[in-house]
Length: 167
Picture (cartoon, helix red, strand yellow):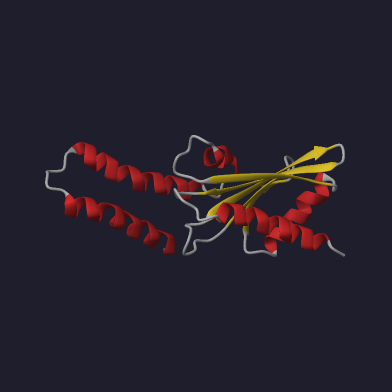
């Protein structure tokens, strides 16, 4: 119910200025435009928790999301790193929503804050000769400016992983 309230408020904020400032009759083009944004928001909100939609949210041509990506090499096997990352996410501000142990992929999300509607955090782990290559992608689900949240998410998850590895 809380998510529906956010969507309704957003629709109200977008449509009210258009209605109040327009001196002309609505034609079908304006109605299509006004309907496009809430429909896109509902689509993004619906599929945000699916790991299979990673390419949609991180694609450079998706103009309604802001993305950031970081890579790091870690001298731990992919199996151990995958399990450790799931543990780190469960102990952090992120919420683990999907994972694939065969492909070493993880999806975590953040909740909405004053600065953001929430972000998706995709983690891909690839085996290397010396351990693992971990790619972290942080992406908004519907936002044009992110106030540095994506970079912060990557730093937070890497710092928490580092702290969990200290004995």
